[in-house]
Amino acid sequence: MSTENVRRVKSSDIELKDKLVAINRVTKVTKGGRTFTFSAIVVVGNENGVVGHGLGKANEVTSAIAKGIDDAKKNLIKVPIVNGTVPHEQYGKYGGALVFLKPAASGTGVIAGGAMRAVLESVGVHDVLAKSQGSSNPHNVVKATLDALQKMRDAYTVAAHRGVPLDKVFNG
Image (cartoon, rainbow, N blue to C red; front, side, top):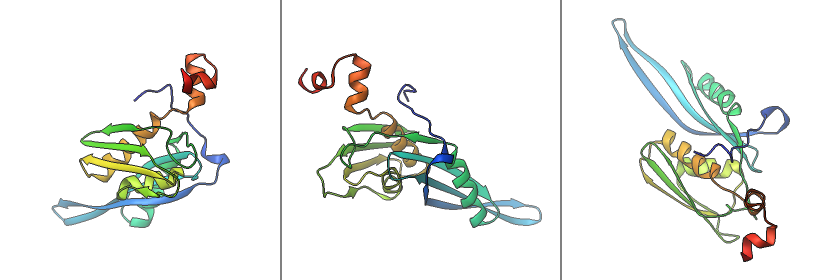
């Protein structure tokens, strides 16, 4: 994960929408019986290039979700979006999950599975072809998708990094 492209965002100055990705009921067996707790993985985004994920754990589902939203607001990143799609093809990996994102023509829609779909819709991508390979664990798929999105660079970033004018990026 390259840290040069990660642009942290403060949650106070933007309107964020949250999406629940998965809830997991965890059972702990004690000598007094079984204790049930819940963990919730949540994705938040402003549907305009900002997205974050969080994990919340609590004794009730609602408080687990609330904790997940608070955690997600602390982990926001800025992602380049070009004409409602991703700038280029990109792989992302986390743990056993491998994801592939590919730009799509306008009107295609978000062709992606559950956990990936939540992340891509939260970030504001309207047209993308995506494939999830390997692990289908929602925690790892969300993190792999965010890894792929963090690696995305738009033409302006590439031009600035190379120190050349913008038209030279496409014609060079």
